[in-house]
Length: 317
Image (tube, rainbow, N blue to C red):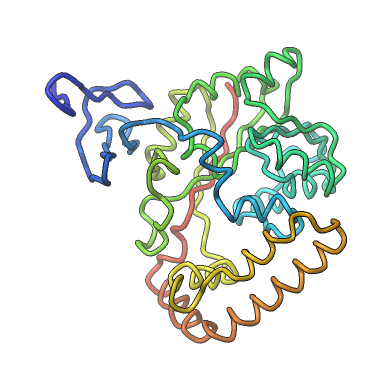
């Protein structure tokens, strides 16, 4: 039996399947990346989420909570709303953020519920979108408080890579009605290298490809698993140029100015924030539109456009 050792006495088993056939792939300061030879999941060790305080210090999340209407939907969320299985059923969104996805799902006839550990985001969802059945708690806490509730659909977009305990999927199965489905998305570890920025520990703890995601969901008791690739969307792609040129062409001034409006009345804050984002967008397209078109065409022609994220749908057995 082959085992990987971190130090003389510590052995690393797969965090997803418990298998001992893991191999070290990469090192990043105090973390090491392992891949399970059995289920193909890649995970960082130490395997520990940094907690709510870490995410509370992320400027993008703080700005999102101030003005939820400014936060665009993920491409995977748009895909769900377009295909919309079980229209009109009950839907629980885990890691709901400020509720912009829930608000759109509600417009399409779903009876929506959400939970998130970020109390400020949940408060923003109530204020901005008049959502009422939303909760600042963990999934386990939600189940304890609502033991009899069941849902036709449970969604979790860009969440699984943050988890340091996969027991949540046992809870998800309990919360699903018979024949209910779980829908999730996560970054594709085979995507174009420049898109990997931010995919580091402790922010992200796992990396997934199509095979590992299917293996994982099967082990967790789901069937009829379908995994699709989510393509790059141009307007989100051009926003990457701000990240890639940070410090020499992009300085995040609009976001800093928006964060400075915390004590401003909501209506004035929304108006000022909208103006700041418009100016930022004009600058973004003025500087990067042509190079973005060239690079986007390259991604399209080489097939890399279709490898940004994974979108999975699975049914409760």
